[in-house]
Image: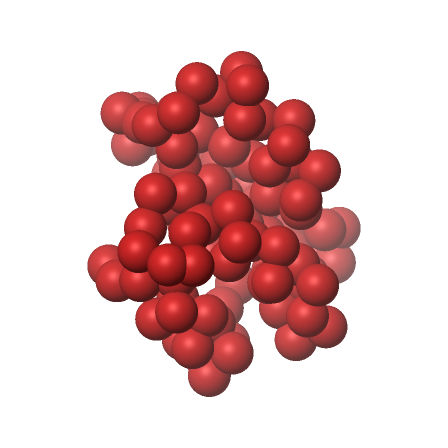
Length: 98
């Protein structure tokens, strides 16, 4: 889905997801703010969130992980790697390991 941070939050609270892929650069609220809201809300805090960023991933990684991101990938990203990491995260989530 593409849209604003507002759209992402509305959808996240209306549906049940096993995993969320979130871009940091989006119309307000930005992805960093959306991540913080998702991780503070009991309805969504256990959902693994993968963050995509065009920013310097080394600078952003620690801050995003501290906010609750499951993983951070720099754009452009390797689709095979992203799918592999998603598969691992969803399997762990289904087993209750996340």
